[in-house]
Amino acid sequence: MPAGGLASLAAQEIPNDFTAIVREKIPAVVAITTKQIIQGQTTLDDFFSPFRSPGLEPAQPQVREALGSGFVISPEGYIVTNNHVVADANEIHVVFSDKQISPARLVGRDPATDIAVLKVDPRPNMTTTAWGDSDAVQPGAWTIAIGSPFGLGGTVTVGVLSARSRDIQAGPYDDFLQTDASVNQGNSGGPLFNARGEVIGVNTAIVSPSGGSIGIGFAVPSRTAQRIVDWSDRARFHRSASPGDHALDCRGAWNTGQQGSARRLGRARQSGGEGRHTGGRRDNAL
Image (tube, rainbow, N blue to C red):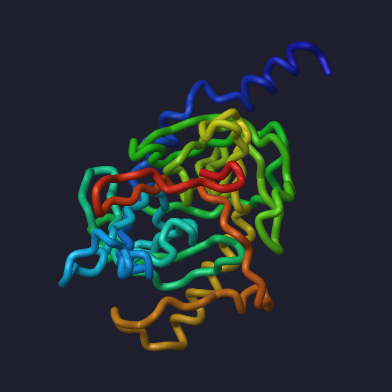
């Protein structure tokens, strides 16, 4: 191919920037905050301690707060995130790009693939995302991550797809997309877009010796996430749901009883008693 042809091809494939895509999609990306009430547990040491006073009250409940990300998939108010972001939460709230906060409820979840579906009351002119084909994207293609790392909502990072079908030993369905777009604590559950602004993955985990991004991030492929979401949607269609209903367990979509261990990107902190501390990470997850 002539040199001029290569230059023309490069000009077509390399965008000047991603401002148009970001401007269009950022209203569909949300921050997710959760609260979990952890009941205080009194141990035998508490009863037999020489410092225990008569009538000592039981240990006070603690509140664990977590931060994550998600994205709107329908104008009816359905939102996709990671299961580990909302697992065991007593309260879930969604923060939109205009800083408006809405309560959310968990309507579907699959621990094995770490995908969950939330529901909020619809907003006027609600911006939504569209699924892309994760099987079509190839290493070297542009990737765009939008989320709320460390609670900084609407953060945009850009990279490339580094590899496909990565097995990070997170469960029975390890088939992650790898990207070098920077993702950190709080990005969990946020979308990974292609250069057309389609969701090709759900950001879930990183490899990091320090807890910060070193350019090795992993996302659940849209093929997997969409299958779980579609199954959950069909199941809801056949069941009359009320706000008091339990979330649908979507593990039937994969015909398995196994659960994968979540590789966490959420940022957790726990308060109560005398102080506050950061929740522990495991396996270099966020």
